Amino acid sequence: MNLRSIEIACPDAAGAARFLTEIWGLAPAEVRGATHYLRGSGSYPYLIAIAESDTPFVRSTTFTCTRERLASLAAGIAQAGLDARPVTSEDPGGGEGLIVELAEGELFRFLADSGEVAPIDGDDLPVKLTHCVFNAIDAEATGHLVEAALGFRVSDRTKGMVFVRCNESHHSTAFARAGIASLNHIAFEMRDTDAVMRGIGRLRDHGMVPAWGPGRHGPGSNVFAYFIAPFGGVVEFSTAVEKVPDDYPVGAPKDWTWPEGRIDQWGISDRDNAALRVAEERFRFRRDWEPAPLNPWMGAIA
Ligand SMILES: [Fe+2]
Image 1 (cartoon, helix red, strand yellow):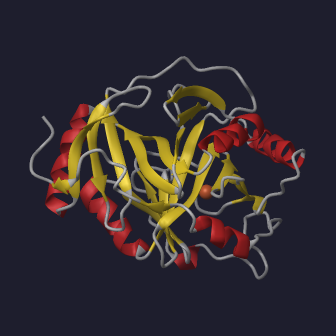
Image 2 (cartoon, rainbow, N blue to C red):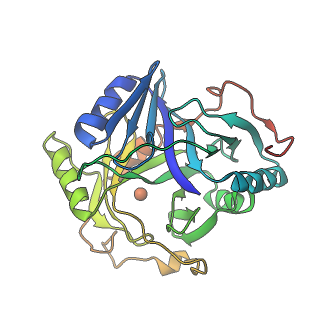
């Protein structure tokens, strides 16, 4: 299973798409109606979809998987008693699967047989999403829920986060102990550390400085730089997170502490906590964009 894309909505979707293509570095993929689809250099048809809305919100987060995995997901979701329904994607790439609502309103979509596209060149293009992180009222409970219902695995727990993997990458998502349910940030995977650094330079050319970073994280060991995008959300340039074995020992908060005054492996980063907090609360979850209601799960995927 792989994280493929996130679907969001906000005011001035065209302006958000302009920032993400002309400055951040994504490539335009397609515009359908008022929804802008943007891609990276990899084989996914798009990484982020931005629809027009009066208020910002997260529509869904999309993973790709096999049909066999869909069947086991359906069983786990039924057992957990979550609301879900079958879905046929009308986004680029198509695909069929199911959409499920987690305990705090997060909509996760799982698609099989979704199409891919030819990769494109570009050292400074994000390759794909590396992770999407969400704020949670009860991050611990959500970590347990995605393990039980979706077959995800908790990789590490820190004072602030529960990191969760859906394949060998250390995390594709994480839930922050934030006391609120919202999008925390979207991380774009760059080809290497140089591409992260050049990305920081590109944003500096436009008068933007990182809200956190650059630095190197503990869990996942990725190089990072976070920015508050003009459309209001938090976006991250990241290198790939580390791959972990099946028997990776789940770390606890005491395993991930920093020396006094440090907040990353290198000890070089500063963090604008106040500005990030505001931006991390901006994109909430809404299910009413969904064209059909999600009912208590009634049956398995055919
Ligand atoms: Fe991140």
